[in-house]
Length: 70
Figure (tube, rainbow, N blue to C red):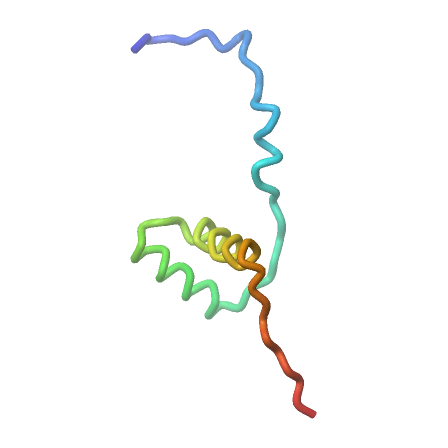
């Protein structure tokens, strides 16, 4: 391993911004606590765990079954 590296001709990854997009969502405290606890158990950051869960829901086209009772 070198002591110094020359990054003067380096360039940023042009695809890095396409990989993930930053968004702001509002989640209940109990939801965040649940994912933080689960994340500690499996050793994954909680935001990554939420992303994996939502990605799984999207890829399997899972829908929430909600019915409003009047």
